[in-house]
Structures are given as C-alpha cells and as structure tokens.
Amino acid sequence: MYLAQNRKTAYRIIKEEAAIVDLNNSMLYSLNSVATLIWEMSDGKTTIDKILDKIEEDFDVERAVAEKDCMEFINDFVSKGILVVVEN
Image 1: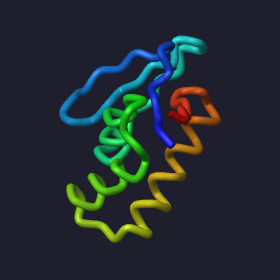
Image 2 (image 1 turned 180 degrees about the vertical axis):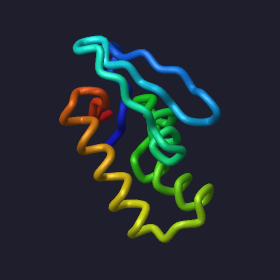
Image 3 (image 1 turned 30 degrees about the horizontal axis):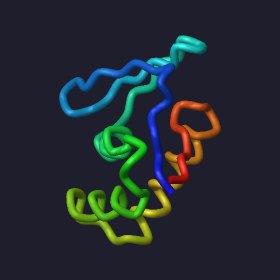
Image 4 (image 1 turned 90 degrees about the horizontal axis):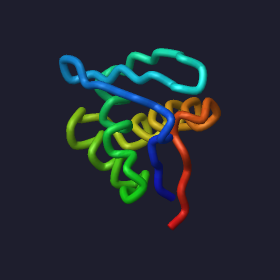
C-alpha cells in the first residue's frame, strides 16, 4: 500500500516542519517533524513499511509505537482527503 499527497493541497516546509493548506476548504494544518516526514514520503511510490522504517531510523522509536502513531496520522489525513491511498 502506498500513500500520495492529494493534488488539491499546497504545502511549504518551514524550519523542518510542513504547513499544508487544503485548497478545497482553505484549512491550514501544521505538522510536527514525524508527520512532515510521512507527508514528504507520500509520493505514491513509497510503501507505508518504508515510511515506518525511516521513522524508526530517524527518531529512534520502537516499530509498534511508530506504526501506531503513523497509522493514526494516515487515517486522519486520508479521512480528510489530504492523503490518498494508492495500490500499485
């Protein structure tokens, strides 16, 4: 399973954290460093497992914790239409 950014969003990285605007409703989202990593890796070509590997590596966190937090973020942003699940 892969993630992709919805094309109807705009974002900018400010001091290593993303600010995302949903162009459908003009909502602004400010992401912490872990969520920013997930966002940036959501290119439609990178698996969720690879994203989890990178979180474990960069933030020195156990896989179960990384998976729980990552999936909460993904589910929230997919439900809002900001991230899209792609099955290649």
